Amino acid sequence: MPAKRNQVLKSTLGHQLTSLCKTRWVERHEGVIQFRSEFSQIVKALTLISVWKDAKTSTIATTLLNSLCTTEFLLSMLSLIDILKITLSLSRLLQMSNLDANGASTAVSNTMSTINEKRKNCEQNFDKIYKEATEVATGLDIEIKLPRLAGRQTKRENYPEGKDEYYRRSIYIPLFDNVSNDLSSRLRFSSLDCFGLRGIIPSILAKANRDNETIFIKNLETAYENFSNIIGSRDIQTNSILFEGELTLWKNHWKSEKEKNKKLSGDIIEVLDSFDLNISPTIRNLLRILATLPVSVATAKRSFSTLRRVKTWLRARMGEERLTGLCLLHVHRDVTVDIEKVIERFAKNGNRPLEFIL
Image (cartoon, rainbow, N blue to C red; front, side, top):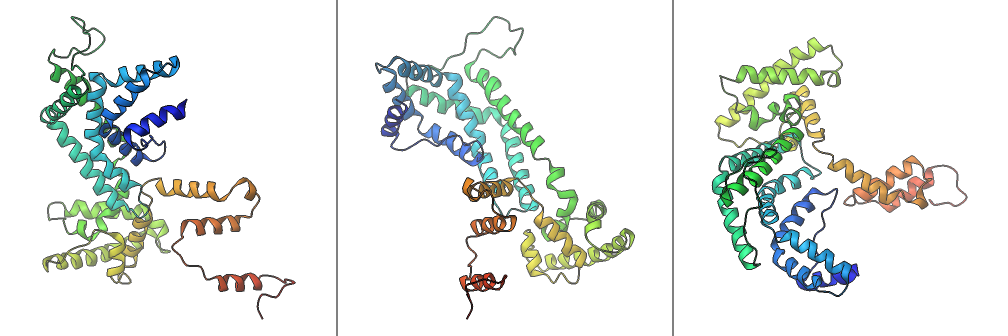
């Protein structure tokens, strides 16, 4: 019976709906947006299934249909999409394997400012959503109405009696506030700033003016102290003195580049490749630390998925070296492996009855 229901849905839509994946947040965004795009066809498919003679299937379809064809669900779906279309690009960015802390911090800052701006203009934004909901409801013969309300609410908020005002205060604004608070708690700028190391990046360093330059340099020196134990073999005080000199030369170099109207890069890898960092070894090490700091858990999850595919029940007793090699081969498929060199290395490891090298 599930296959029969799925066949009705596929024949109505023409394709399969995107499921809400538990691990890939991008697919959750796309799944909700696709659900909105195919909303009318989904309602049509449920209407067809609701008249089947099978009591269990028709009852489930009728229950889903009654839940979808309500004002609360329609406005909640459209309000959620109004947020997801902003956070979708951030979700994609945070799952990239080559993302650095600077790019992540910039993307989070832009997303948060956009959400806060939409929250300030919530009346104008919700008017568009309410008009869209009215058009969808008219096409599906759904009545936009208020839920049953008491004269005076004692356990919940007392919202105005106007339909648009009621749903704006009860659905749209709480949803925006919840998402904004959740992003602020999960993506703290104190974590993304990596203890202030972003200040070494030329595009950010050149923005420091005379008013905030002292604070800016102090934050960089504080950030340096957090990583000083893994940078050099000298004592901390000696390293701090050398770092002050390198930082002064580094700052003056990029300020002179800015005065020449040259574009200052914000990408850490480009800075490492374009500048002779032998002049500033401490800054070179800090840039390497900043480039390798993990921004999200996406890369770690990819390694877990790779391990699950490689280490099957038939390979459960393989050695650690072989397991690591197979995982690296699986992940880095773009790296060309010379078979002749592999055979030659295999032949030289220990005495073998069969001669591989003549």
